[in-house]
Image 1 (cartoon, rainbow, N blue to C red):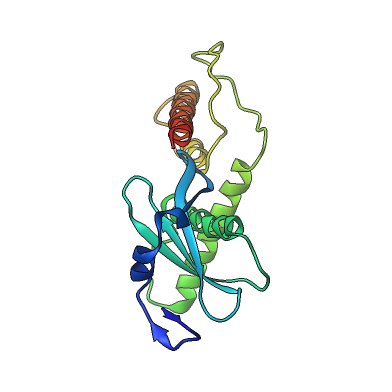
Image 2 (image 1 turned 45 degrees about the vertical axis):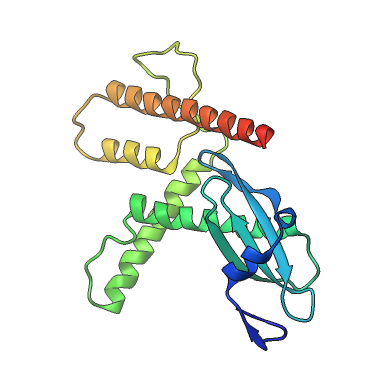
Length: 208
């Protein structure tokens, strides 16, 4: 990157290595699949104004560094830059879901028109699954094999909805009761794993 109004070229990791330990602040980049994503963050102003910044993120476990070149039309706090940087995780999750659940990258076409048709259908499929998963309180059917089980599962996710639709729309290899039982088991297991991850992340935050 360049500092001093573009006159000096310097590596971002060199700048990060020269910062004192007190320059880092702990902030969460938002909640992930395993709980709050806490990192150490630092920033420096680059250029001659307060609109351009180098944002530095350090993994608290591995020490791995990540860098963001930032620009803001008005003066902002470090926490705001961290919040915006955390949105990148949501974008990456969206692309991962599109590829894994809607087949965004599962094509073997050679023409522009064919590629557009495939991408459009994949995006529509992902939008449909995402809209179903976004329902704040879907009416879940009762697990017929364990109707009184008390452990609440997590809300239906995009992969779980796709799994259920695939089982319903194709020739069933198992009964509907067995299918719902496995769905409830998976979502209960995921709920237990999520609570464990969040407890561990909360304990790490208290210890830090």
